[in-house]
View 1 (cartoon, rainbow, N blue to C red):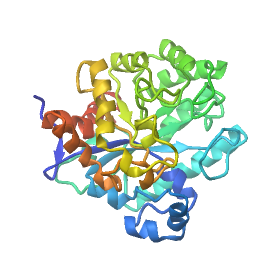
View 2 (cartoon, rainbow, N blue to C red; view 1 turned 90 degrees about the horizontal axis):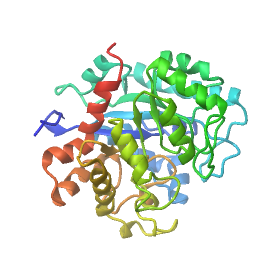
View 3 (cartoon, one colour; view 1 turned 90 degrees about the vertical axis):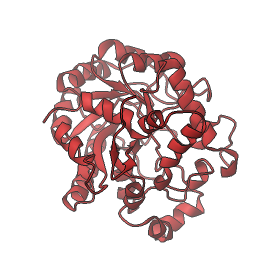
Length: 359
Protein backbone atom coordinates (compact mmCIF):
# COMPACT_ATOMS: atom_id res chain seq x y z
CA UNK A 1 0.00 0.00 0.00
CA UNK A 2 1.39 3.40 -0.96
CA UNK A 3 2.24 5.51 2.07
CA UNK A 4 0.01 8.57 2.24
CA UNK A 5 1.48 12.01 2.93
CA UNK A 6 1.37 13.34 6.46
CA UNK A 7 2.58 16.53 8.06
CA UNK A 8 3.45 16.86 11.74
CA UNK A 9 2.07 13.35 12.22
CA UNK A 10 -1.40 14.15 10.87
CA UNK A 11 -2.95 13.32 7.52
CA UNK A 12 -2.87 16.17 5.02
CA UNK A 13 -6.26 17.54 4.03
CA UNK A 14 -6.90 19.07 0.61
CA UNK A 15 -10.14 20.95 -0.07
CA UNK A 16 -10.60 21.46 -3.79
CA UNK A 17 -13.22 24.20 -3.68
CA UNK A 18 -13.52 27.28 -1.46
CA UNK A 19 -14.80 30.74 -2.42
CA UNK A 20 -12.59 32.67 -0.01
CA UNK A 21 -12.04 35.78 -2.13
CA UNK A 22 -15.66 36.10 -3.26
CA UNK A 23 -16.83 36.15 0.35
CA UNK A 24 -14.02 38.44 1.48
CA UNK A 25 -15.07 41.07 -1.06
CA UNK A 26 -18.56 40.92 0.46
CA UNK A 27 -17.10 41.77 3.87
CA UNK A 28 -16.52 38.33 5.43
CA UNK A 29 -13.10 38.04 7.10
CA UNK A 30 -11.69 34.49 7.02
CA UNK A 31 -8.50 35.53 8.82
CA UNK A 32 -10.13 35.51 12.27
CA UNK A 33 -11.15 32.59 14.47
CA UNK A 34 -14.42 30.82 13.79
CA UNK A 35 -15.98 32.28 16.93
CA UNK A 36 -14.96 35.78 15.88
CA UNK A 37 -16.30 35.24 12.37
CA UNK A 38 -19.64 34.06 13.70
CA UNK A 39 -19.85 36.94 16.17
CA UNK A 40 -18.98 39.61 13.59
CA UNK A 41 -21.55 41.89 11.98
CA UNK A 42 -21.41 39.85 8.77
CA UNK A 43 -21.53 36.64 10.78
CA UNK A 44 -24.71 37.71 12.57
CA UNK A 45 -26.34 38.54 9.24
CA UNK A 46 -25.39 35.14 7.89
CA UNK A 47 -26.62 33.34 10.99
CA UNK A 48 -29.97 35.11 10.69
CA UNK A 49 -30.29 33.48 7.25
CA UNK A 50 -29.25 30.03 8.53
CA UNK A 51 -25.86 30.42 6.87
CA UNK A 52 -23.65 30.23 9.97
CA UNK A 53 -20.01 30.48 8.83
CA UNK A 54 -17.92 27.32 8.72
CA UNK A 55 -14.69 28.41 6.98
CA UNK A 56 -11.84 30.45 8.39
CA UNK A 57 -8.10 30.17 7.92
CA UNK A 58 -7.61 29.07 11.56
CA UNK A 59 -10.22 26.33 11.05
CA UNK A 60 -8.40 25.16 7.92
CA UNK A 61 -5.11 25.12 9.82
CA UNK A 62 -6.77 23.06 12.57
CA UNK A 63 -7.72 20.47 9.94
CA UNK A 64 -4.14 20.40 8.61
CA UNK A 65 -5.53 21.62 5.29
CA UNK A 66 -2.21 22.19 3.53
CA UNK A 67 -3.77 22.81 0.10
CA UNK A 68 -7.04 24.37 -1.00
CA UNK A 69 -8.30 25.34 -4.41
CA UNK A 70 -9.26 28.99 -3.97
CA UNK A 71 -11.67 30.31 -6.55
CA UNK A 72 -11.89 33.40 -8.64
CA UNK A 73 -15.68 33.41 -8.82
CA UNK A 74 -17.82 36.20 -10.22
CA UNK A 75 -21.59 36.04 -10.07
CA UNK A 76 -23.61 36.41 -13.30
CA UNK A 77 -26.34 39.00 -12.78
CA UNK A 78 -28.74 37.07 -14.99
CA UNK A 79 -28.29 33.70 -13.27
CA UNK A 80 -30.99 32.18 -11.10
CA UNK A 81 -29.28 32.25 -7.73
CA UNK A 82 -29.56 32.26 -3.95
CA UNK A 83 -26.18 33.90 -3.40
CA UNK A 84 -25.79 37.43 -2.11
CA UNK A 85 -23.75 40.07 -3.85
CA UNK A 86 -23.73 42.13 -7.03
CA UNK A 87 -23.61 40.32 -10.36
CA UNK A 88 -21.67 41.19 -13.47
CA UNK A 89 -23.38 42.26 -16.66
CA UNK A 90 -20.36 42.37 -19.00
CA UNK A 91 -17.04 40.70 -19.60
CA UNK A 92 -15.30 43.87 -18.43
CA UNK A 93 -17.10 43.76 -15.08
CA UNK A 94 -16.31 40.07 -14.65
CA UNK A 95 -12.65 40.70 -15.49
CA UNK A 96 -12.35 43.59 -13.03
CA UNK A 97 -13.96 41.66 -10.17
CA UNK A 98 -11.73 38.63 -10.69
CA UNK A 99 -8.68 40.91 -10.63
CA UNK A 100 -9.80 42.29 -7.25
CA UNK A 101 -10.12 38.75 -5.94
CA UNK A 102 -6.67 37.89 -7.26
CA UNK A 103 -5.20 40.88 -5.45
CA UNK A 104 -6.91 39.78 -2.24
CA UNK A 105 -5.22 36.36 -2.42
CA UNK A 106 -1.91 38.06 -3.11
CA UNK A 107 -2.34 40.34 -0.10
CA UNK A 108 -2.93 37.31 2.16
CA UNK A 109 0.19 35.67 0.74
CA UNK A 110 2.19 38.85 1.39
CA UNK A 111 0.99 38.72 5.01
CA UNK A 112 2.09 35.10 5.35
CA UNK A 113 -1.46 33.81 5.91
CA UNK A 114 -1.54 31.62 2.79
CA UNK A 115 0.98 30.31 0.25
CA UNK A 116 0.17 30.69 -3.42
CA UNK A 117 0.92 27.46 -5.26
CA UNK A 118 2.01 28.00 -8.86
CA UNK A 119 4.27 25.01 -9.39
CA UNK A 120 5.70 21.77 -8.00
CA UNK A 121 8.23 23.57 -5.82
CA UNK A 122 5.47 25.61 -4.17
CA UNK A 123 3.46 22.43 -3.61
CA UNK A 124 6.41 20.70 -1.98
CA UNK A 125 6.89 23.61 0.43
CA UNK A 126 3.19 23.61 1.34
CA UNK A 127 3.20 19.95 2.36
CA UNK A 128 6.68 19.77 3.90
CA UNK A 129 6.17 17.64 7.04
CA UNK A 130 7.80 19.98 9.54
CA UNK A 131 6.36 23.22 8.19
CA UNK A 132 3.54 25.12 9.84
CA UNK A 133 0.07 24.31 8.41
CA UNK A 134 -0.29 27.48 6.35
CA UNK A 135 -2.87 26.74 3.64
CA UNK A 136 -1.45 26.66 0.15
CA UNK A 137 -3.83 28.03 -2.47
CA UNK A 138 -4.13 26.75 -6.03
CA UNK A 139 -6.09 29.33 -8.02
CA UNK A 140 -9.19 28.04 -9.82
CA UNK A 141 -11.38 30.22 -12.05
CA UNK A 142 -15.01 29.16 -11.56
CA UNK A 143 -16.83 30.35 -14.67
CA UNK A 144 -14.58 31.66 -17.44
CA UNK A 145 -16.31 34.98 -18.08
CA UNK A 146 -13.43 36.99 -16.49
CA UNK A 147 -11.52 36.00 -19.64
CA UNK A 148 -12.76 38.71 -21.97
CA UNK A 149 -11.53 36.62 -24.90
CA UNK A 150 -10.20 33.06 -25.11
CA UNK A 151 -6.78 34.55 -25.79
CA UNK A 152 -6.66 35.92 -22.23
CA UNK A 153 -6.01 32.42 -20.91
CA UNK A 154 -2.30 33.23 -21.13
CA UNK A 155 -2.74 36.35 -19.01
CA UNK A 156 -4.52 34.41 -16.28
CA UNK A 157 -2.00 31.57 -16.40
CA UNK A 158 0.78 34.10 -15.91
CA UNK A 159 -1.22 35.51 -12.98
CA UNK A 160 -1.21 32.07 -11.32
CA UNK A 161 -4.52 30.48 -12.36
CA UNK A 162 -3.95 26.77 -12.90
CA UNK A 163 -7.51 25.43 -13.28
CA UNK A 164 -10.45 26.86 -15.24
CA UNK A 165 -14.12 25.90 -15.23
CA UNK A 166 -16.12 27.26 -18.14
CA UNK A 167 -19.44 27.53 -16.32
CA UNK A 168 -21.43 28.29 -13.21
CA UNK A 169 -24.72 28.95 -14.81
CA UNK A 170 -24.55 29.54 -18.53
CA UNK A 171 -21.62 31.74 -19.59
CA UNK A 172 -20.24 33.18 -22.81
CA UNK A 173 -18.28 29.95 -23.08
CA UNK A 174 -20.65 27.09 -22.29
CA UNK A 175 -23.90 25.83 -20.91
CA UNK A 176 -23.98 25.32 -17.17
CA UNK A 177 -26.11 24.41 -14.19
CA UNK A 178 -29.81 24.96 -15.03
CA UNK A 179 -28.66 26.28 -18.41
CA UNK A 180 -28.27 23.30 -20.76
CA UNK A 181 -26.45 23.71 -24.03
CA UNK A 182 -23.22 23.31 -25.96
CA UNK A 183 -19.93 25.13 -25.92
CA UNK A 184 -20.12 28.44 -27.72
CA UNK A 185 -17.64 29.27 -30.49
CA UNK A 186 -15.57 31.10 -27.86
CA UNK A 187 -15.82 28.05 -25.64
CA UNK A 188 -14.43 25.83 -28.36
CA UNK A 189 -11.57 28.28 -28.90
CA UNK A 190 -10.95 28.37 -25.16
CA UNK A 191 -10.29 24.62 -25.09
CA UNK A 192 -7.37 25.13 -27.45
CA UNK A 193 -6.06 28.03 -25.37
CA UNK A 194 -6.22 26.04 -22.13
CA UNK A 195 -4.32 23.25 -23.86
CA UNK A 196 -1.72 25.71 -25.08
CA UNK A 197 -1.18 27.12 -21.59
CA UNK A 198 -1.08 23.74 -19.84
CA UNK A 199 -4.07 24.60 -17.67
CA UNK A 200 -6.54 22.06 -16.28
CA UNK A 201 -10.29 21.96 -16.96
CA UNK A 202 -12.79 21.88 -14.09
CA UNK A 203 -16.05 20.31 -15.26
CA UNK A 204 -18.14 21.13 -12.19
CA UNK A 205 -21.23 23.16 -13.17
CA UNK A 206 -20.71 22.50 -16.88
CA UNK A 207 -23.80 21.41 -18.83
CA UNK A 208 -23.68 17.81 -20.02
CA UNK A 209 -23.63 18.68 -23.73
CA UNK A 210 -20.79 21.14 -23.11
CA UNK A 211 -18.99 18.52 -20.99
CA UNK A 212 -18.77 15.99 -23.79
CA UNK A 213 -17.77 18.60 -26.36
CA UNK A 214 -15.06 19.92 -24.05
CA UNK A 215 -13.57 16.47 -23.48
CA UNK A 216 -13.42 15.88 -27.22
CA UNK A 217 -11.64 19.18 -27.85
CA UNK A 218 -9.45 19.48 -24.75
CA UNK A 219 -6.46 17.19 -24.29
CA UNK A 220 -5.23 18.30 -20.87
CA UNK A 221 -6.02 17.35 -17.26
CA UNK A 222 -9.70 17.16 -16.28
CA UNK A 223 -11.33 17.25 -12.83
CA UNK A 224 -14.60 18.03 -11.12
CA UNK A 225 -13.60 20.22 -8.19
CA UNK A 226 -16.97 20.06 -6.41
CA UNK A 227 -19.59 17.65 -7.75
CA UNK A 228 -21.52 14.66 -6.46
CA UNK A 229 -23.20 11.66 -8.06
CA UNK A 230 -26.30 12.12 -10.20
CA UNK A 231 -27.20 8.48 -9.61
CA UNK A 232 -27.84 9.44 -5.96
CA UNK A 233 -29.02 13.06 -6.37
CA UNK A 234 -30.63 13.31 -9.83
CA UNK A 235 -30.06 16.94 -10.84
CA UNK A 236 -27.94 18.46 -13.60
CA UNK A 237 -25.61 19.92 -10.96
CA UNK A 238 -24.23 16.42 -10.35
CA UNK A 239 -22.26 14.01 -12.55
CA UNK A 240 -23.67 11.00 -14.34
CA UNK A 241 -21.84 7.70 -14.04
CA UNK A 242 -20.60 8.18 -17.59
CA UNK A 243 -19.21 11.62 -16.79
CA UNK A 244 -17.43 10.27 -13.71
CA UNK A 245 -15.96 7.45 -15.81
CA UNK A 246 -14.70 9.96 -18.38
CA UNK A 247 -12.94 12.00 -15.67
CA UNK A 248 -11.40 8.85 -14.20
CA UNK A 249 -10.23 7.78 -17.66
CA UNK A 250 -8.30 11.07 -17.81
CA UNK A 251 -6.81 10.25 -14.36
CA UNK A 252 -8.81 13.11 -12.87
CA UNK A 253 -10.31 13.47 -9.40
CA UNK A 254 -13.86 14.28 -8.29
CA UNK A 255 -14.23 16.45 -5.17
CA UNK A 256 -17.32 15.56 -3.14
CA UNK A 257 -19.43 18.52 -1.97
CA UNK A 258 -20.58 18.57 1.66
CA UNK A 259 -23.90 20.36 1.11
CA UNK A 260 -26.78 18.27 2.43
CA UNK A 261 -28.97 18.95 -0.61
CA UNK A 262 -26.19 17.58 -2.83
CA UNK A 263 -25.67 14.58 -0.57
CA UNK A 264 -29.32 13.57 -0.10
CA UNK A 265 -31.79 14.53 -2.82
CA UNK A 266 -34.70 14.20 -0.37
CA UNK A 267 -33.31 16.81 2.04
CA UNK A 268 -35.42 20.00 1.74
CA UNK A 269 -33.99 23.52 1.69
CA UNK A 270 -35.24 24.01 5.25
CA UNK A 271 -34.26 20.51 6.34
CA UNK A 272 -32.80 19.59 9.70
CA UNK A 273 -29.02 19.33 9.94
CA UNK A 274 -29.36 16.17 12.04
CA UNK A 275 -31.10 14.32 9.20
CA UNK A 276 -27.93 14.00 7.08
CA UNK A 277 -24.87 12.28 8.50
CA UNK A 278 -21.39 11.46 7.23
CA UNK A 279 -22.71 8.15 5.93
CA UNK A 280 -24.17 10.19 3.06
CA UNK A 281 -20.71 11.50 2.18
CA UNK A 282 -19.33 7.96 2.29
CA UNK A 283 -22.12 6.83 -0.05
CA UNK A 284 -21.07 9.29 -2.77
CA UNK A 285 -17.39 8.45 -2.28
CA UNK A 286 -18.16 4.74 -2.49
CA UNK A 287 -20.13 5.22 -5.71
CA UNK A 288 -17.30 7.13 -7.40
CA UNK A 289 -14.87 4.41 -6.34
CA UNK A 290 -17.15 1.69 -7.70
CA UNK A 291 -17.08 3.42 -11.09
CA UNK A 292 -13.31 4.03 -10.91
CA UNK A 293 -12.63 0.51 -9.58
CA UNK A 294 -10.13 2.05 -7.20
CA UNK A 295 -9.94 4.64 -4.40
CA UNK A 296 -7.59 7.04 -6.22
CA UNK A 297 -9.98 9.36 -8.03
CA UNK A 298 -12.09 10.97 -5.31
CA UNK A 299 -11.38 13.69 -2.78
CA UNK A 300 -13.04 16.51 -0.85
CA UNK A 301 -14.38 19.61 -2.63
CA UNK A 302 -16.36 20.90 0.31
CA UNK A 303 -17.66 24.21 -1.12
CA UNK A 304 -18.50 24.94 2.53
CA UNK A 305 -18.46 28.71 2.00
CA UNK A 306 -20.39 28.54 -1.27
CA UNK A 307 -23.89 29.57 -0.19
CA UNK A 308 -24.68 27.27 2.73
CA UNK A 309 -23.58 27.24 6.36
CA UNK A 310 -23.30 24.92 9.32
CA UNK A 311 -27.06 24.32 9.08
CA UNK A 312 -26.59 22.69 5.66
CA UNK A 313 -23.72 20.26 6.27
CA UNK A 314 -23.78 16.78 7.86
CA UNK A 315 -24.61 16.49 11.53
CA UNK A 316 -21.10 15.64 12.69
CA UNK A 317 -19.51 18.69 11.03
CA UNK A 318 -19.30 22.20 12.49
CA UNK A 319 -16.54 23.77 10.38
CA UNK A 320 -13.56 23.11 8.13
CA UNK A 321 -11.68 21.99 11.23
CA UNK A 322 -13.81 18.83 11.19
CA UNK A 323 -12.84 17.65 7.69
CA UNK A 324 -10.62 14.86 9.12
CA UNK A 325 -13.81 13.26 10.47
CA UNK A 326 -14.54 12.17 6.89
CA UNK A 327 -11.46 9.95 7.05
CA UNK A 328 -12.68 8.45 10.32
CA UNK A 329 -16.09 7.79 8.76
CA UNK A 330 -14.44 5.98 5.86
CA UNK A 331 -12.38 3.79 8.19
CA UNK A 332 -15.51 3.00 10.19
CA UNK A 333 -17.15 1.95 6.91
CA UNK A 334 -14.35 -0.55 6.23
CA UNK A 335 -11.82 1.49 4.29
CA UNK A 336 -8.12 1.15 5.01
CA UNK A 337 -6.37 4.03 6.72
CA UNK A 338 -4.27 4.64 3.59
CA UNK A 339 -7.36 4.78 1.36
CA UNK A 340 -9.10 7.19 3.74
CA UNK A 341 -6.05 9.44 3.82
CA UNK A 342 -6.03 9.39 0.03
CA UNK A 343 -9.54 10.81 0.02
CA UNK A 344 -8.65 13.41 2.64
CA UNK A 345 -5.79 14.76 0.57
CA UNK A 346 -3.48 12.23 -1.02
CA UNK A 347 -5.47 11.80 -4.23
CA UNK A 348 -5.51 15.53 -4.92
CA UNK A 349 -1.80 15.78 -4.11
CA UNK A 350 -1.06 13.00 -6.59
CA UNK A 351 -3.07 14.81 -9.27
CA UNK A 352 -1.39 18.15 -8.57
CA UNK A 353 1.97 16.40 -8.65
CA UNK A 354 1.38 15.38 -12.26
CA UNK A 355 -0.28 18.56 -13.54
CA UNK A 356 1.36 21.61 -11.97
CA UNK A 357 4.33 23.13 -13.82
CA UNK A 358 7.73 22.09 -12.52
CA UNK A 359 8.72 25.72 -11.86
